[in-house]
Image 1 (cartoon, helix red, strand yellow):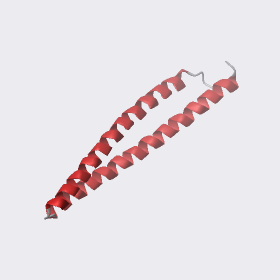
Image 2 (cartoon, rainbow, N blue to C red):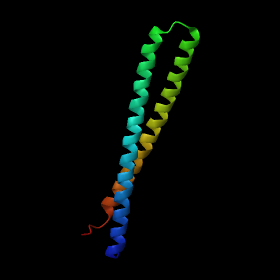
Image 3 (cartoon, rainbow, N blue to C red):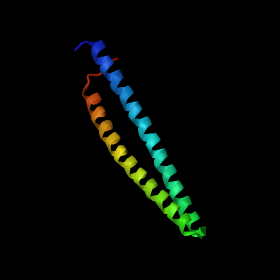
Image 4 (tube, rainbow, N blue to C red):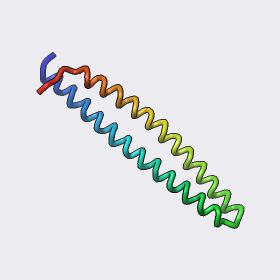
Length: 96
């Protein structure tokens, strides 16, 4: 294989790996933010007096938990992509 061809493959893989890391970090931040919102809603529920307010907060918590579950599935997918791309990168001959 030509060095320039291998170098372009290595560069592309490095770029894709960096993008996966960024996406993963962003998703972690989203999950942390959702957990923080859930905690705040649970605290607010203790102060709520109306049934409508409680129902609204419980509904919001359910949506946030579903969102966190989606984020966890995406994180698993990103992790698998990272493993795959890193393995492919490690199979490439070293280029200077």
